[in-house]
Amino acid sequence: MTVRSPLVYDAGPAGTSGFLRAATPAELLEWQTAIIDNYAADPSSVLTVVSGSGTISPTMADTRLQAGAAQQGSDGFVAAFPNASQTGDVSTVTVNYDKVSGSFVTSNTGEVDSGYNFPLYYNEDNDSIQPMNLEDLVDSIIEPTIDLMVAAVESDTTAGTYTISTSTSVTGYTEVSGANTAIYADTRADTSSYSAAGIPETQDQPTTINSYFLHRKNAGSTTPSTQLLHLDNAYADPTNVKDFDIRQYTIAEATTLLGTWLKVYAGEVSGYKITYSITTDGSGGNARGSSMVDTKLDGSGAFSTTLQNTDDYRAQEFPNGSAATVTTYTLRVTKA
Figure 1: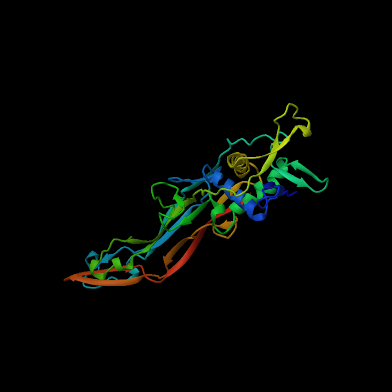
Figure 2 (figure 1 turned 45 degrees about the vertical axis):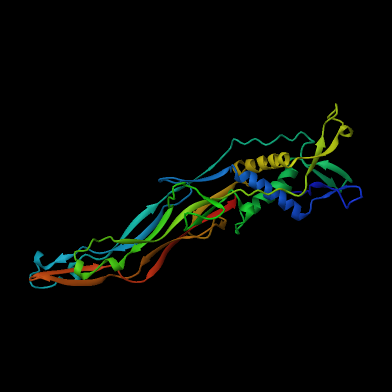
């Protein structure tokens, strides 16, 4: 890998001649952010919310307790309450979510390296100004930009990538389903809904603790403060380097050139693809957004009885206990 610093034109102080110099790290970051904005307007690594059979999400189980089946004394237990062995035990209800699919856009075509149309850099080895080739472009600009996009901390340089939130609306992001469709929900038994007086209670009476939504970070509007340089074949013989002028790209020209190659590598080239997964073991790259946590009450059941009227003895076991974490699911992103 050889990292080249692209050249920019510096007008210098008023009354002085301008000169060429390497872009500073801050100036290069402006360019990286600008081409990330270009990418974010039309990403090449895409997540969607589907009804089921998602391609990147495992089967994410939401588990909760439900009450056991009730027993009544009039059903063979006359003049006595049924005991705990005669009522149904509390049991686990499982609802599975599998709503996230991933795909890559492979229809982008980067501008072909003509030998002079890529950004210029200063080659110290032979004391010359040269255009980058595609390998230089990838090593110096594209790959470092992808590294910014898959970073753990979300910022302007993660535009076009995805995150999880418990809110349907997040400033600077777009909810992916377009219909506030949760990709996962954590529910628990609502213990306040069960009462002895209500026996036989409906067995499954859940309450939603958290719902989780998939969002994509919106493109920004970064305009670099410098302009990159390239050779201009305005003369008749493009094979003769002496016939080339040095010209500044317009911001739009450079953003399109670099942004398109970013889309190609992020969506098509092995080792550079922006890749997502949902894992439970910490593998798969950097975590994005809120982890999706399945919780369940940890009790073994609360035995309750009621006498409704003469010889109508009823009993039922209700969910009880404290909330305990069962499984934690995390959206992760990496370059793969």
